[in-house]
Length: 230
Image (tube, rainbow, N blue to C red):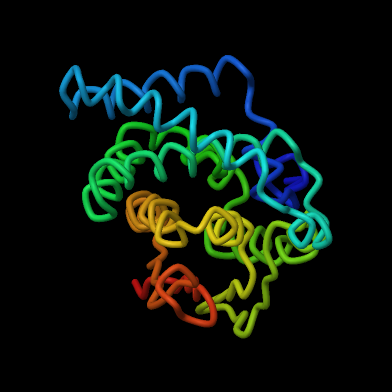
């Protein structure tokens, strides 16, 4: 099987998201806003729209030179993430960080399909044969494209027939959140990983673990995948 044809193989996460179909992006936005609006009152909806627009104007003025210097040139991705961060900033202004994060988590719950469609399909994994070896090769192809795209800096400290780990020391999602002065907003992206990955990988006989993230103040996000013992 040619893994180069598998969804997401050798492609930076930012390029995957930035390349989503416009119709799909529109649907994600609709679901996201509906999810938020269902949690607030009529007057709060009006206030949120004004606050959101104000934060969008701030986002348009953010200096992204350092991020671009890392290789990030995917404008569709950048604009998409700044919109998300602007929404969080507006929610935080109105309701505080704790409630705002819960609202962002609810968006992730409602749009899990977005992350799932960025992953290899069960059919692709099955066609390859050995699921763990499939993901070893898939993960091993990640570091260089991610670095070139200015998306992630990734090292692979362990790669054996029983476990593979990759550590992220630079994450553009986190860096954009820092530029918007809402570093905690990146926790929503981390949450989406924890929501999908455990069951996704378990279905292939692989245990997923992560003990820390950049968003939590750790020096790295440590993603670990262990082959289940039969």
